[in-house]
Length: 171
Image (cartoon, rainbow, N blue to C red; front, side, top):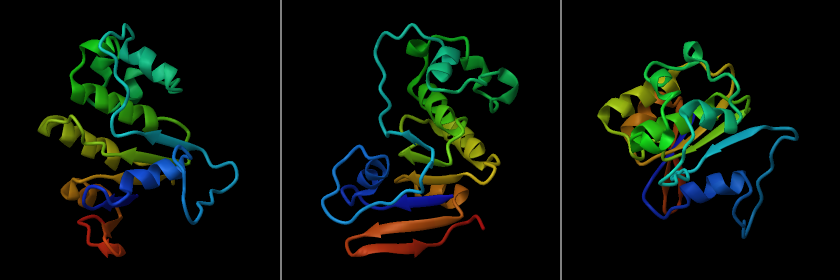
């Protein structure tokens, strides 16, 4: 799992968008392995004020067919039967994160996954990210250096003059 952190405006989110081909690249190129399956969570997942879908229906619509309580991390199962427009911002964020992680993607890209998370939901996120990923790659962009240090095996810091390797607390 690779973490990318640094100041605002240094291109972290733009890099993720370039990987999923949702932004223009002005120089250079990104080459992806043919057949690579990507899952991408934008830093501000779309959320309408009225969404009469349940958490289970949201996961199903996101392609997560196995939204059974016994396969969900602790704390998410109770959200399956609740309308998503009645969830807190943090609960909604955790469901979206799980929707990316529970797919069969080869590479999961998470942009600022701690947005809207209170301390309890942040702790739940750390537990979710620590789950075994069966060889799947993950790239996480965050301003939360502590989170990245705890969950990532490699951490890169974006600076004015490029990237530098940063220490993590995880091996």
